[in-house]
Length: 280
Length: 298
Image 1 (cartoon, rainbow over the protein chains, first blue to last red):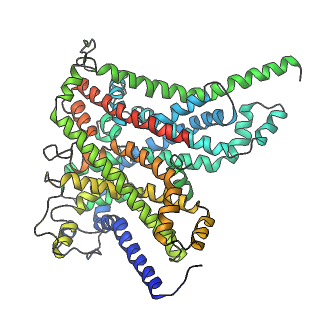
Image 2: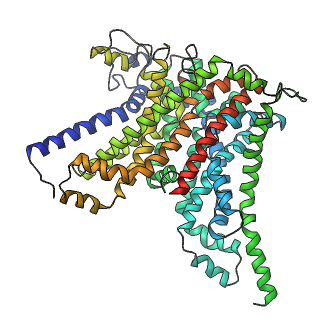
Image 3: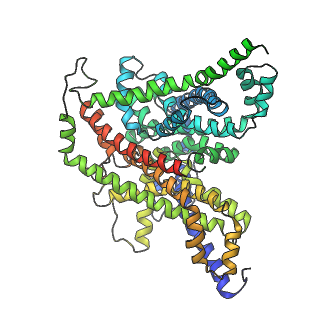
């Protein structure tokens, strides 16, 4: 119905594209600047006028990060903790989601509300009692301390996400197993799990990202450099050499790679995980 | 099936959900609900955590916090930081979603821009903090661009002068957080029935009228629920502020989370920190209750 190609209409289209370009600058320039700075020498980063493309392209910052066993350890720690939490969260959340999705039981509604509300508990509130617990169980500065605490934060949302997914699967599938005399446990592993892969992937992506990004607990519950994760490593790097900006940017790029890769290959799952809680 | 078998089956069906839920409930109970009770307990003790036999302190730690001007400053900064962030997340998210949804742009360009506009979302708070520290360095690129354009006369120390620090961290957080709104609103826009717009076209409605009378009312449920979630989450922000300003200079960016953290782990006053943590918990719970009520009403 819209009239096309009138001068006014063309003007609106042009204005829209100008606005889109401005939006692109706003969204992407800081990231572009991080990327280009990571390929510059430290003096070039603050050159006047600023150089948009690195004039003397160098990989020295990356070499410095990847050649340092201390920094590689940060990456190992982050991958290890996030990986372990992801496996545990998905398993435990899958069981809970199966319970929520396939059974009717007393207290279902209130348990569901409880799980929704635990998502918004401020981390700082739990930090002090966790610190007390971790110290008294002598697991301060260990992987266990991080894995257990992260599990608490990833679990509620993972349960909601998995429940949402299982609810979309037809019930006749597992009822068929029941008719054949199989238990609900058999139905879960033989029927539900194999067709739940998309839900499992979305939950894993979400859980992994949450752990990869975690800062407050990693800062407080670990102490030795060999136990630190990437976010804390970046902070340490900033304290040690306050002016090695190119190394800091290289480390930030390397620290963002898992998220970028997951986003690019599993965009659908990524968005499903990040927005499932808010859009229903 | 015999009757016995059937009743056993029924019993199994009745017990099974609790078994499936038990690992989650144990973890949430022991590591979420119990610690919440513990922290409330700590807030009424002297030398909580640090001593084995802490004495009862009554409301002493709460009084100490409410008498502390830094606490009130932190509360005010938290409120400013959070309100500004949510309002701008929503505004920018809405504008970007509407632009991307326009049929005036070519679909390939739309897909590319959608990916690029989401970018800030993919970065960890710590990395966002480091990026903005580099950008806003006194000798950094933002100052040099602004000076070349003649907008500012001299280099501004964005993060280290008390007048600009709070605005600078808020700006960094606005940049980091709008994609949640954008993605959700974009999904919402695609769900609005086309015939609403067709009917409006027949009535000769103008573009802004369609926006005000169709688009925004249709998106209202998403706007409200995401605003509430965003508000609750932004209120709890820690790493961004910790890395950019650490709450300084002279407490000018101190927020409730950094205030509590410093009480606990710089001054080792864990009792008073617990009291402050309980205050944060109460504010969050109030908002959460509101959120759940809203979700149920839908």
